[in-house]
Amino acid sequence: MKLTGPFKQLLTMDNLPEKGPLSDDQLEIIPDAGILHREGKIIATGNFNQMKEQYATTTIEWLEGDYVGLPGIIDTHTHICWAGSRANDYALRQSGKSYLEIADMGGGIWDTVLKTREATLEELAELTEQRAGKLLKLGVTTIEVKSGYGLSVEFELKILEAIAFANKRCMADLIPTCLAGHILPKDFVGNETDYLKLIIKKLLPEIKRLKLADRVDIFVEKSAFSIPAAKSYLSKAKEMGFDIVLHGDQFSTGTATLAIEMNAVSIDHLEAADVNEISILAKGNVIPVVLPGASLGLGEPFAPARKLLDAGTSLVIASDWNPGSAPMGNLLVEAAVLGAREKLTMAEVWAGLTCRAANAIRKTDRGILKHDYLADIIAFKTNDYKEILYRQGQLTAGMIWKNGEIVT
Ligand SMILES: [Zn+2]
Image 1: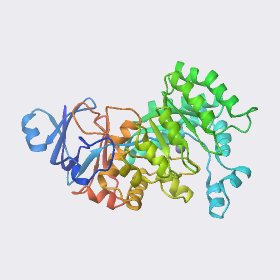
Image 2: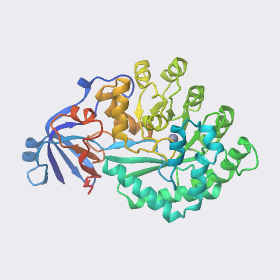
Image 3: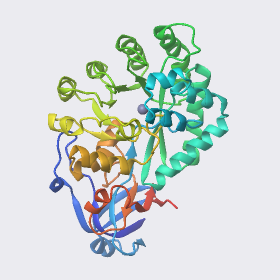
Image 4: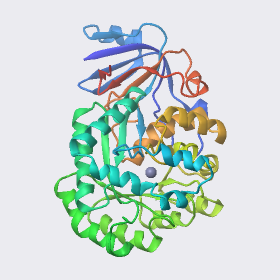
C-alpha cells in the first residue's frame, strides 16, 4: 500500500453528469490531497495529513513542491499503427490541392496503406510502441488504436497483431479497434458491398477467434463508404458481438441517424454536423467524439462542441493522431485550443479527456480518481488547475502514474 501526495489540488472528476454542459464549480477539488493505492488500484482519496495518520504504517511517496493531480488522460481515437510519412500531402494541401486531387496523385490513405503493408509486424509494433510511449509521456494512460491501413484480411490481421504486441510492451493500455472499413482498397476487385461482405466473412471471425479487438469502426463519407453499405456491415458486426463506432459527419452529414439506429458507442468527427444532426444526437445516447487535431491538420473548422453540449449530449475530445489529417499527436494542446475556440469550460474539457472519455471506450475502471478505480494519475507542477489549459499544452504533466507505477 502506498500513499502518494500531497497534491495541492486533486481533481477527482467524480460525481459529474455524463451529458450536457459543465461549470467549473461542479468539479470536485480536494485541497492538500493524498491518494492511497495498492496493486494499481485506488483505495481512497482524501486529505493527505489525515490519511498519513490513519494509515501510519503505509509507505509514503512524497511529492516535492506544488502539484495538481488529475486522472490519466484517455485518447479514444487514434490511428498510431502506420508506416511512412504524409508530409508531402500536407505540403500539397497548403499549396491549394484538394483531398481528392492528392489521392489521385498517389497520396492520401492509400499511400499509407501501401507503406504499412510493406512494413514487417515487428516494425509496426515498434512504431506503435514509440508513438504510444510519446502519448504516455504527455499523460495519456489509455490509448485507443485503430487498424485500417491494411485493408485486406491478411494485412488487417498483421496490424491488429502489431497493436497487441505493442500493448504488451508499453505501460499505457492500448484499446484496439478494427477499421477495415476505412476506404475501399484500390486493389480490391468488386464494389463496397462485396468488400464489406468479405470482411464480415473472413476477417471479423478471425479477430474474434484471436481476441484481437472488440470494436468495429467504419468511415462513412462520400470518399469512403455509403450509409446503406455501412448499415448492413455494422448490423452484422453487432450481431457478432462487436461494439460499434463510426467516423461520421466529417465533410457531409447524415450519419447521426445511422449511429443512433446502430446503437453505436460513439460517432467521431462531426465537423460538418448541423442543427439537425445535433438534435438527432441529443435525443440518443451515442457519444460525440470531436477531433480537433484533424481540424488543425486539414485547416478545417472545428466540430460544434459548444452546440453539442448545449443541446445536451456528452462530449469527448480525442486526437485522431494519424499520418494524413492529424499529424500533431498532442491531445492536450489540441483540447486546449478547441476549448478556447469553442468556449468550453475547463470542466468540460477535462471531462472530455477523462471520465466522459472512459464511457466512449466502455471502461468503468478509469477516468475518475476514486475507490476501486485504476491508479492512473497525472500531476502538473502548479498550484492551480486553471494554469494547465491556460498554458495550452506547454505545461506538461511532470509526473505520471500508470497502475500506480511512476512512468519514467
Ligand atoms: Zn480517425
